[in-house]
Length: 88
Image (cartoon, rainbow, N blue to C red; front, side):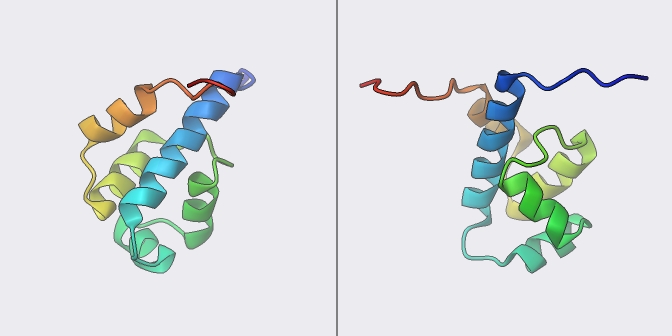
């Protein structure tokens, strides 16, 4: 199976995902959240920085649960359009 290249929209959504998870993590350390989600700290770091723009659904669900963020709220955040440069 050949994976389709990521679009700019995919990359933007990955950055918004990382931003939402980073904000929801708050003062908790990456180690605490990664451990609670059952993933490595490096994977969490890459997701938060948008370097893994399309993580597996179960990874996203585990992270959302670990930071106390509902999947509905996370989806709403991801559906927001990125801000355009110079927009008021």
